[in-house]
Amino acid sequence: MDLLISLSLVQSVAYPPISALDPNLHSLVFTPESSIIQLDSIDPTAAEMLHTHLTGYATLREYYDLRDEEVNLEPGQKPRLRPIARKNAAATALLAIINSAADSIHGGLYDEDRGSIVQVDGLLALLGEAMVFVDRMSYLD
Amino acid sequence: MSSMTSAGSFSLVGSSMLDSRTTEGSSSRALVKPEEVKRRGWDWRKGLARDAKGEDVLRILRLGLAKDIARHWIMDEAS
Image (cartoon, rainbow over all chains, first blue to last red; front, side, top):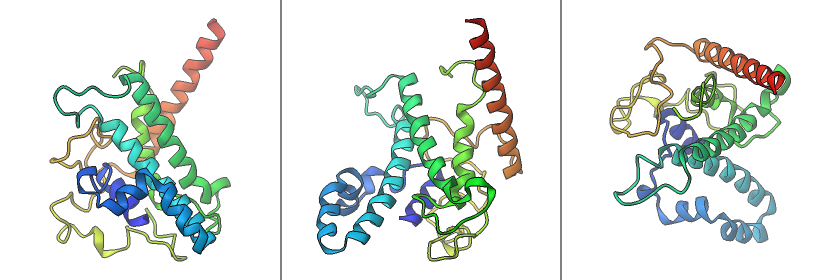
């Protein structure tokens, strides 16, 4: 999961693209409940870990998919949200990931025991993604 | 990006998977280089110099956030 998150961050895109997701990963990302419930009956700790890591990866994908929704549309399709709402949703998702990635350096010192959804290494790339949201006269551009 | 997460988790930066010669045509080692082939809604790497560093990203963010906060203060005052 860390690898997928890192690859997505480096390429600034949801990796692998939806078309390339194998069925297992696809169901893990979009309908995690069944897999996690199954795993929970075997190993609750593992289920919890899987859940938190999946959440981070899924949220990061959600951020990129929201950003790219318009360019990836088939002709004739319309995006689910209007541009401003889409930007707001993307910003919210990104902020959640940033907060999680920064959790292990909360207060300025690195604490590797504070497990987080996304590793702090990716924080700079996430902050780079966040640059588009600051210092805008309006959210329309 | 440092490889601080040595305690059991994977860090892409120190690994060989980031080698541009082995990945399938994706972008080079420089983490601020834009990818030509992908279409994105927007690309945060555009508008940055090729040799932009982490400090530049942080500077832009800090300045932008300071401006945004100041703007909101002013608007709150006015209303």
